[in-house]
Length: 429
Image (cartoon, rainbow, N blue to C red; front, side):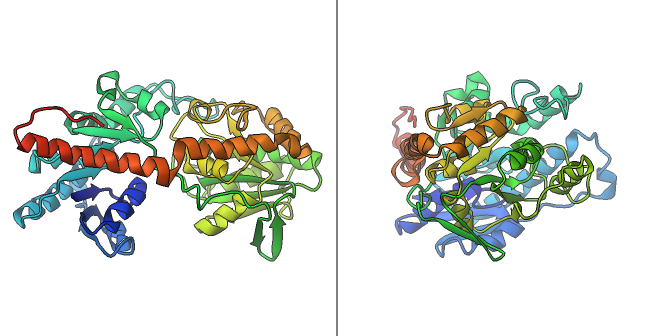
C-alpha cells in the first residue's frame, strides 16, 4: 500500500500510523511537511520519504488585507505549496493509494484538484464555535461580538475538507459532536492511542530533579500541560496553591510545561503566564515557595512519565477544547486524576468511578478534593486502578486505536480498488 501523509509539523497526530506503516516493507510511505518539520522527520523512520514545502512570504503590499483573512491567506499559501509538491509527485509517476491529511493549516485544500481519484482521509481536530466550547467559557477572558463571524471564517478550511474528503476521523465523541451534523456520518471516532505498555504505574517510582529525589507514595501533586496557560486551567491551579500549601505543610508540587502560548490570550507579562501568575501571587502577599513548587519546563518523555509515576494527585483542568493526551497518559500511569467538570473530560472521567471532578473555576473545591485524596490514599486506590483500566479499554494504542486507524486507511484503499474494478459499493469504516 502506498500512503501519503500531509501535516505541516509531521508526524503530529500521525506518529504511530506512520511508524506502523513504515515497519511493513510491503508499504511505501511518503510525507509532505513544512521545511522545518521535514528536516526533523528524517529521523522518524529510514523508509519514510519526506518532501518539504516552502510557504511563500507575501509582499508588503499584500499584507494589508482584512485581519480575518490573515489566517485564510496563510492556509491558501500552504495549500498552494502542497499542491505544487503533489503535482511534481504526479509528474514523476508517484501515485499514492491513500492520502491522510490534517486540514487545519490549509494543506489539504487543493489535494483533490491535483489527485481527484485518490481517496483523501482527513483528521478533524476541532470545529470552532462561538458558543458551547472554548470561546466565552472563561469570564476572565470574555467573548467579543465579532467572535462568531471570525470563527465562521476560521471554519472555512474545515468545511472545505469535510466536503472534499472521502472519509475523516477525530479522536473523541465530543470533538465528533462539534462537527456539522450533515458531515458527521463520514467521520469515524478513532483516538491516536496511548501506549499503556510504556506508560504504566510504578509503585516504587522515583523522579530526580536538581538534586532532589521525589518518590511514589509521597504527597506530590502534579500538573502537566504542553504550555502553562489559561486554556488548561493554569491560572486556576496557580491561584489555588497558596491555600493548598498552607493546609498541607509537607506537600510538593511538580509542574510540567513550557512558557509559550498554544491557545487563547497571551499573558500581559512578556515572559508568559507562569511569570505573570508568580508575580500576581507575590503581589498579594502569597509568594510561591520555590522549595515546594517546582517548575520543570518541558521534559523528555521518559522523565515526564516518571513525574506521573510519583504523583499522588494529578490535576487536569481544561476549557471545553481538545482533550490532552497527558490526561489519558496520567490515567494509564495509574494517577488519581482530578479533572475539570467540562465536556471533554467527563467523556472519559466519572467522579468517584475512575477519578474526581471539580468545577473548573472553584479553587476551594479543587483544594478540598486534593487534600481529601492525599489524606486517604488507600480509599482512592480503586479509582487509580479504574483510571488505568479506562485507558486500556478505550485508548490502548497497540490493541485498539492503532489497529482501528490502520483498518480505516486500508478500507480507503479497498474502496478505491473496488471502484477501479467497476464495483460501485460504498466502503465505510
